[in-house]
Image 1 (tube, rainbow, N blue to C red):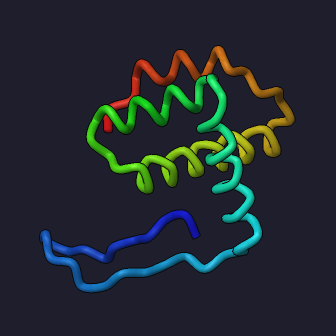
Image 2: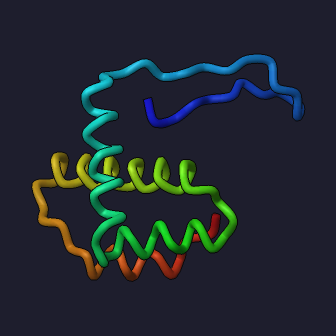
Length: 96
């Protein structure tokens, strides 16, 4: 529920699809994004970086929620630990 898909061919949009998922999970990730806005960590820096590139608050918060979801998926798949230093390194390579 965090991503919308456009069906596009030859530059013309002919349909939009919304992924329907679990509202509870969306609320968890959006809540985690809001909570991270109140702290000083790598995710807050990611948010600030998106805002400085011109994204409005809502879009930057949703992008941060997507990032949190991808981190959670990676941890679940690989059983690793969250490393904030790695996230800070990846922020330098982001091109939005």
